[in-house]
Length: 142
Image (tube, rainbow, N blue to C red; front, side, top):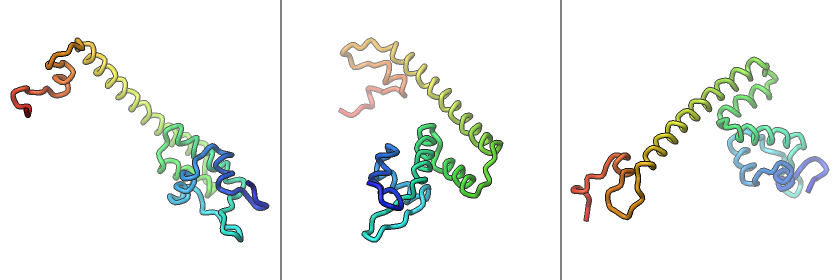
């Protein structure tokens, strides 16, 4: 539902595909400004807030942290953003993503190698458990 001066939260949620509680959370942490209320007490969001919310959601989809998003929004809000500044922050984020991907690839290789050593037989000795730090069967509880 759209009021004369803006969007109600449910309409904003439908328009952006964002959960109602997520919108409330983004207000609480300061990524979205607290909207004014109508005479009957409903929050009324300015239509341009949908674009800001889309920015936040897309940034989250790309793995930006809340602080990274906040810092970008501060630049935008103050009108101080430059392509060079945003590029630098995005490059830093991309470098972090690449490090995580590299780490995940190492984890994948280790798990695949470990799993390939397992026979899957119904026996107590398991190469997977041994590779995870080993279980000394003599020290196990009954």
